[in-house]
Structure formats: C-alpha cells, structure tokens
Length: 240
Length: 319
Image (cartoon, rainbow over all chains, first blue to last red):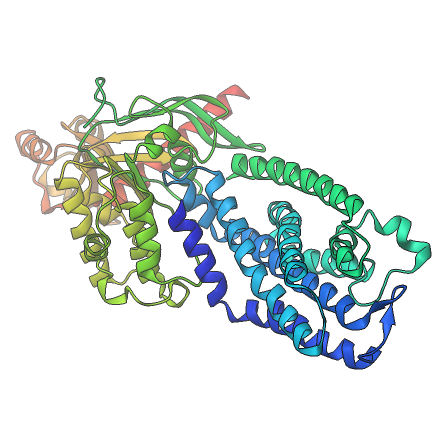
C-alpha cells in the first residue's frame, strides 16, 4: 500500500498543471490583493490585509489542490478503468482512496507554505508558535476537502466532474471570505460553508482565541463528507 | 497448486442482466488446471461480462462463481489470479517501470521488476511515461501487470488488440511460456486463428449462452469441418439425393443443377475420408473432387448461425 501512496504523491508533484493552479496562482493573487487593498490597510473589523489574504489564499490553494487532486483524478480513473485494474490486485479497496488522500495531504503543504513565505516577506508578523500552529491548522483542515473531493469523484461523471468541482469550489470561495470578507449580515449563513469555517481557523492569530465553533463545524463536515464518500465508493464498486 | 476438486474456476448456472439485456444466461462451466482456453463469440456475446463475473468485478444475478474453491476476491487477494482487461486503464504521470513495480510489490509473491519487464517485452520502454505509449505497448504493460507474480490463472480479454503482427507473435510466445509453466490461461478473442493455434479448448459464447465447448478440432467437426465438392454428370449414372445425404459424416448438403444436367454437389462433412470412400463404393463417379478444410472461422459462423435458426424456430413454435 505504501508503494501506491508513494506513487500517487510522486505523480501529483510531477504534474505541472497542479503546480500552476494550486501553488503559483494563489501566490500571485495574494500579491495582487496586497497591492489592490494597500499593504497598510485593514479589513473585516481590523484584521490587516496582509494576514487576512495570506490565510485566505493559503486555504484557496489548499482547497484547489485537494479538490482537483482527488475529485478529478478519481473520476478520470474510474472512466479509464484504472480503478478496475486495481481491484484485480491484492490491494484492499480502501488503499486507492487512502492513496489519493495522502497525496492530497502532501500537496497542500507547498500551496500553504509558498503563500506563508510571501506573507513573511511582506511583513506579516507572527511568533514561531503562531506560524507553526497556523500551518498545522490549515493543513489539518484540508482533510475536510479531501473527503469532499473523494465524494465528488465518485458522484460526478468524468465529463461533468471539472465544471462541478469548479462551481462548488468557486461558490464556497465566493461566500467563504476568500476574495473579500464576508459581510456581517451573511456571517450567520456562512457558518454552513466549509471554506468560511476553514478560514476562521486562523482567528487565533488575530488575538480572538481558538475558534471552537469553526472546528466543530469542520468536524461535522468531515463526518458527512466521509460518510458520503464511503457510500458512493461502495455504489461504484458494485457497478465496476 | 490447485484445490482438491481440481477446479480452477467454476460457473454454476450463472446469469447476469443489464436492464432487459441478458448478458450471461445460465452459464455452466468448469476450467481445469493447465488448460489454455479460448473464449470466442461475436461482439455482445457476453465475453467481457463473463470475465467480469469470473474476476468478481460484478456480482451475478443468480448462480455462483468460484475461483479455486473460494470467491473471486479471495483468489485475487491470495495472488492466484492475474488479469488483463480490455477496459483496464493505466495510471497517468508515471513511468512504465513504476507501474510494474507497483504490481510486483502488491502481489503477495511478486516477481522482480526486471524479470516482469523482460517477460512482457517492455524492458526498452521501461523509462517511458505510461501516457506516451502506443496501443500495442499499452497492451504489453497491461500484460506485465497480469504476470507480476506467479499466478495460477491468467485471464486476458482480447489481449492482442492494437498489436501489429510481429508483436502479436512475441506476445503469444510469452503467453505459451506461461501455459507451459503449468498455468491456466483463459483468453477472449475475436481472432479465430489465435484460438485455433493456441488454445487446447475453445468455448463459443453466443447471446450469453455457451453453445460449444471442445478442442478446436471438435468445434470444426461439429460444424462439419471439411467441405467435399464435386460434379456429377448425368452420363455417369442416376442421381439420388437421399443416398448422398446418407453418406457417413454428412452434416450439410447443397446441390445445384446446371442447364446441361450437370450437378454441383457440396457436402459439409465431419468425416470426409469415410464420406469420400462411401461415395465411390456407392457407385458414383465424382468429377473434379475437392476436399477442403473449413477454418475455425467458418465453423464458428456455422455454429452461431445454427443457434440463431434454432432459436427462431423455437420462437415460431411458441407462437
């Protein structure tokens, strides 16, 4: 099983489109946002532009990496028959999905760290513990989206998966505070958007303490997405 | 190597439908150790469906499928079955060597990677990316996945599709080596010469049913394996169609008469030697006598054609 997982990670890192889309693109957007909002400005009740968009672009890249890495690939490999071929090996059925999630978990790190590096250069000032804590929180949070990606990969047909993933991704980003802060009137609803909760994980660096509610919400999303992924996987296995 | 019952695989009254289409219809079949078996049938005969059932990729609606006395999944987990599917895709963004290595590592008793690359004849493309291969090369990589370990049964679904003639020959040499090592080989094909020259048992599947099962010589015999052709001139004696039909081994008879009274006779015969001997003994003087062999292809068409006619008659009698 480790061979499969290693190979999944390797091939994802080899894919140039992945690097463009999930690492370079959010990093460039981050630089753009800093200059557009003015590097000294604040948003969302006093949070500095630099640290707000550092978090939102890191999550944007991480969610993108995870959704394309799982949903798109699973769907394509169901179509090509690679999943059938794997079922003719001694590998247990869960190995394939675990391999995808492991590859996702590795590939979110560059997406997060590159944006952090730019943030540090631009002058985001955090303690070492805060940097490490933030990186860990965002990395762990990405597993919620890996589960969603697996579910989408088994739910959507190969021809439809790209637009479906894009629409889900963009809507969650749009109403999750990725490109601009969520307005006060919408915050009550935003709690039901996993990307919003994901961004809220960073609230402790703004002196707001650990975000218990977003953590609980993300845990609930993780449970729901995992259950959905398991059901859809079994359904697919029966259809072969 | 095999189970106590000596059965590699067994279908027992297996049926599978997709919607209203009966893909597999009451299939009863046992494969024994060491056999090289060809599965023949026109497109849509249920070949791929049968292989899917055999490998546990699909569950039968009724009946049971056993591999080595257990479920297909158990046999696969134990590393006793290797398979190459028509619809088996390959991983993208990886090298040939890497995907073969994966197959060797996950097999409980996997061979060495270099060995498998050599067996499949893909050593020289080992460092190529899988997504950059030709159709024939891809097939050989799939074959490598099927022989990554010492499997007792190898299942191949139309393995030589996309291979050119010389590669195809190499492929079958590799396959024969597997069979010579005592492995059971089951392959579906629509190249009849492959079935004829490689298989020691031929199964003919038609509309989800097994309609013939025997050596390729037996299948040909059943269809009337040879054709006896000759002319009968009126000057040489009287013509008696019933007597011709009664010749030993006659399966089919076709007589056409020219304007000058010369009859052209074509007999499909399961025993041409006895038929010709009896022809002379009966006092005939056949002119321009020719005995030609019917290929497996002709035999196959004859058998499936007969099956279609029988079914039509059955339907007609029901009405």
